[in-house]
Length: 397
Image (cartoon, rainbow, N blue to C red; front, side):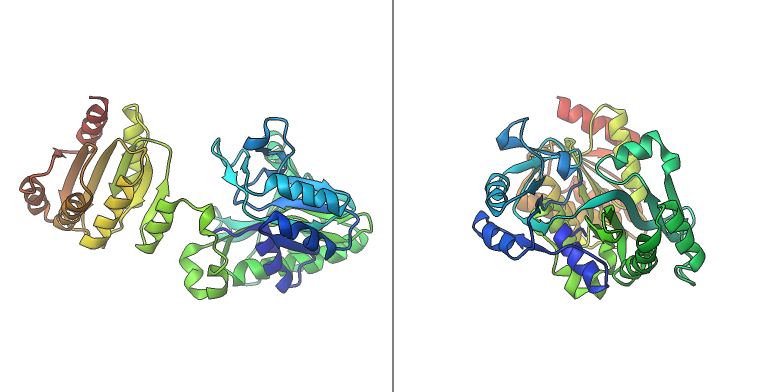
């Protein structure tokens, strides 16, 4: 689960992290009052979307020469002007894709006198099974280029969860970021704060880019991107309330209500599979035969008829879907349950595109019997390769 920058900063502030004063707004009419709450005379107007690269983004409605989604303002009048231009328009960045995202919220923040921009993030390093700090002296909008061109400038410090951050870890972090004097002292206070926030709120990612050294020598969290482990949100009702569903795909929202592992993609063949590994293999073989999957959908090992029907409805609701491939290996998941769910869903919503079903495993004969006797236009497949060939051929016919 992702949250917006202003929400992330408010959360980090409760743990004691140094952040600038700021005010979120939802309409241009609020811009003047928001700016007047800040010290000034420099303000930053920030688009709030769940995507990076905002500073270099462009607004579709304003043309290729439009200013980015993060803008400086030297007066309250300029804050208002920026707000009127940005709110309600579509911001396209490297991470949004060509469709972009509509800006429905802005964050008006007090400006900062920046001496240096640094990069810091915390994530789970799966190679060692520990939380890890990833830091660089080359923070800012071009951090992706740094990672690609000069990876030696990016330092990783894994943290033992039993001991937490040690003095040795802090020494490595402060020296890697070349912090001295007050900035070093601030870092030794800030890094444990960020680690505590990461662990206690079940974050999967905490990215501060940039972490700045100001001209007065102090550190400040200038930007913050936070993602949480969705499987842990039952422990955090307060954080769950921060979810902005307007930033998410409607199909993914519906899938989450049924506890389905669903990710919308850009292809034209809908997939319903049980098991993440089999789902990945199904997507791969679709691509092998020249088409693209429209989604990743894992119904899990113990889904009932209703859950299967819900998954099928979500897939068919995608207007890009030109054909559907159901690929089930029945272990705990029984083939007859899948068949009943598919039949129920098709009878309710209809079938306007080709449907290929491959069943194998527990109760496979009963599952095939249910499909064959349904009277529906369902094409049976013998194995995964046969299924992929048939669905690709069907949508090309």
